[in-house]
Amino acid sequence: MSLPLEGLSAVVTGAGRGLGRAEALELARLGASVVVNDYGRPGRDGSGEASAAPAEEVAAEIRAAGGRSVAHTGDVADFEQARELVESAVAEFGKLDVLVNNAGILRDRMVFSMSEDEWDSVIRVHLKGHFNTTHFAAAHWRARSKAADRPVYGRIVNTSSEAFLAGSAGQPNYAAAKGGIVGLTTSTALALAKYGVTANVICPRARTRMTQDVFAGFAQPDGGLDPLAPEHVAPLVGYLASPAAAQVNGQLLVVHGGLVAIVDRPRVRVRFDTGQDAFTYGELDALLTPHYAQRPAGETFAAAEVLGLRHERDSADRAPASADR
Image 1 (cartoon, helix red, strand yellow):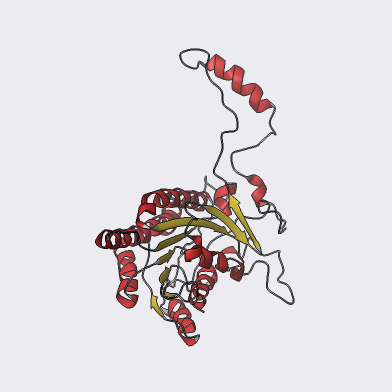
Image 2: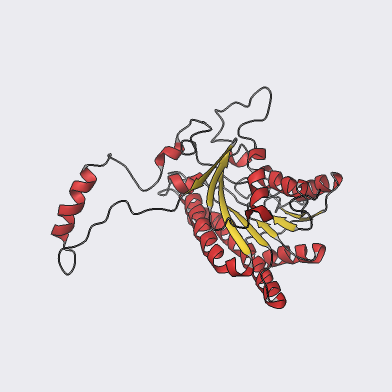
C-alpha cells in the first residue's frame, strides 16, 4: 500500500526545531522527500550565530528512519537564498511539490515601545520570508504547468497565528505579519488554482521555545502526549499537503491538541445606507452612535476571547496566541 505523499518532494522552513521539525518528520513519514530548512540561530528573536546543526539533525533523523532528506541552512527572508532553497529541492528530488512555510522569530513589545528594527525584523522573517519562498515555488509550478500544458501538483501550507485573530496587544509586529500571511495565502490560492496548486494557512497552538512564556503556566502531563505538543499540528499539515486535500484551497484553520477549527471569512454584521447623496457627519452620528452604544463596551474587531486561558477541545476560540516554530 502506497503512502499518501509517496513520490512527492517537500520544503519545510524553520524545520530544525518545534513545529517545523514535527511537520518535516510527518511529511517524511507519509512518504515525501524533504528539504529541511533552518537558519539555525539559537535565539527565538533571531539572535546568535547561525548553525547548520538543527537542520542537519532533522534531515539525519529522517534518513535514519528510511526516508530521503537534505538540509538547507539559508535565510528564507533573503530573496536569493529563498531561490536557492527551492532550487535545492528541484536539484535533489527532480521537482518541488509541497512548500510548508513555518520559519519565524519573536520580538515582542507594546506598540509605543517598539523600535523600528523590532518591527522590520519580524515583518522581514515572517511575511517577506513567506513571500520569497512562495514566489519561487509558484514560478516553478507555473513553468512546469505551461511546459506540460496541464495543471501540475502543488501544495502550499503557510503559518499564521491566533495572535492575528486576537490582536495580541504585546505583538503588533507579529500580529501584523501573521495577518499579512493570511492575505498572501488567499491571494496565492486564487492566482495558482489554475496551475493545480492549492494554498492554505494554519493557526497552530503548540508548546515550543517560541511559546515558552505563553504556556509557562500549563504543566505537561505525567503520561501520554502533551495536549500542546507540536505532533498535534503536524498531521493537518500532512493532510493539506496530500492529494486528498485537492478541494481545500484558500482556507484558514486553527489546530491544536486534537482540534481542527475551520475559520470562516469575515462577514458584514450590519449595513447602513445614506438617505442623501452622501453621508454627513450628523447622519453618521445618528446611525452609528446608537448602534455602538448597544454593543459591549470595549468590543473590537479582534476576537479577544481567543486569548482566554482555557484549553477545551470543543472551544477553538478561547486560548492564547500561538507562535510558529
